[in-house]
Length: 79
Image (cartoon, rainbow, N blue to C red; front, side, top):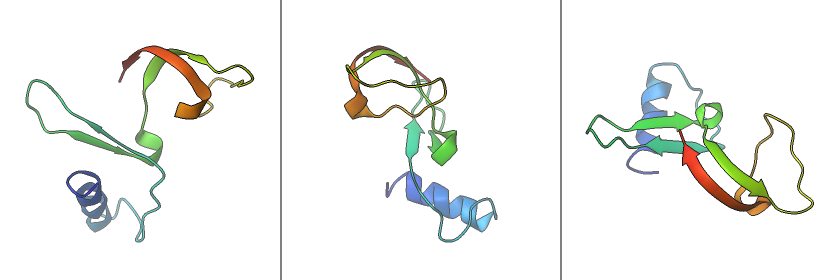
């Protein structure tokens, strides 16, 4: 948070792209092997594509958020 997310929130607030205070529901930091700067995603920008299996009794519609405690296992993840 202190090294990546908070500085990005502050940068966006100074640019007028985020309100003060900024509501933070989720954050994601992508690191790249080729050495380019990390990409910080905030709130609705956060995304992941994964293949997995929901726990018994959990049902979702396309586009619904899926939380870690709802997943039995996952096979692979891609951004």
